[in-house]
Length: 95
Ligand code: FES
Image (cartoon, rainbow, N blue to C red; front, side, top):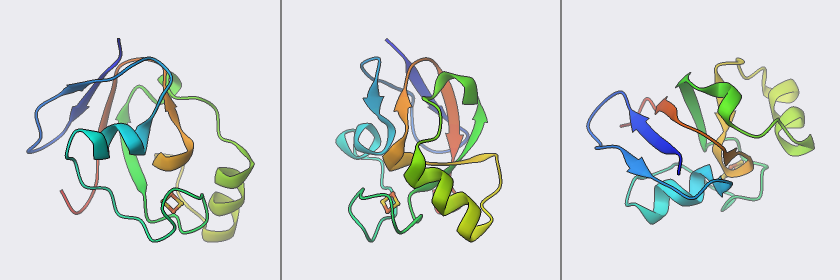
């Protein structure tokens, strides 16, 4: 089962392979910013992937659209649109 580690504050969590990143964090009490409730339109749920970016599912159309429109850097992923396939380390400015 994939492990999600954090650069600060939160202890690691273990999630089911293929679990949605944002939902997994919320289910474990880790706050994730959002104003669209995971619909893939606000971009507030973006997280910096410190390591293991290849362990997330590829970007879908919603994420590509947000990235292009808002010039989101490649090190960030839209967490409501990504599924976790392996171990990753993540960070957010507000943690
Ligand atoms: S929660 Fe709005 S884009 Fe992810």
